[in-house]
Length: 213
Image (cartoon, rainbow, N blue to C red; front, top):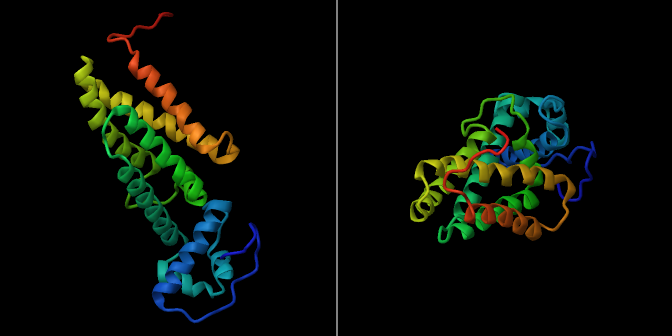
């Protein structure tokens, strides 16, 4: 797929591949199309055309569009989860925030097509769940470390789950925005996210109250 311009409908010349190589090629082609056009608009015929094969080849490997889409989503979610979890080495909670923010932005920068697929509402069941469930898994990783910090600072440890969801959600939503604008630079975005989150965490009231109610 190297050198192909976005939207180019020219099929790849038919070459002999092993079953595994053909499967990987179809996944790469489908991933690019799903990111570009979405699930509903993309067709098996278009996937086959781009890959330079007949439609029955796609059905043989994946059973149809739903099958290949589910595999694309599963692989992308597992890759993102592994990428972020491997980055969370613990240590000081502020370092944890930096690691999580940088890992997600690194993924968005290096796998933009995959992220576009994940943030769309999936019409097909995935064995790894949804993007929301993936964020919940990441928040659980953050919660375990944030909970220890809360205990040391005299805050209610039970609230660590709430704050971890808020922090991960903030980074993920900002990542969706940055995916399209790409300004400011990645590290600057991460620094501002950490600044907002950490300055807030380090000056929290033990029992916050609303001022307007």
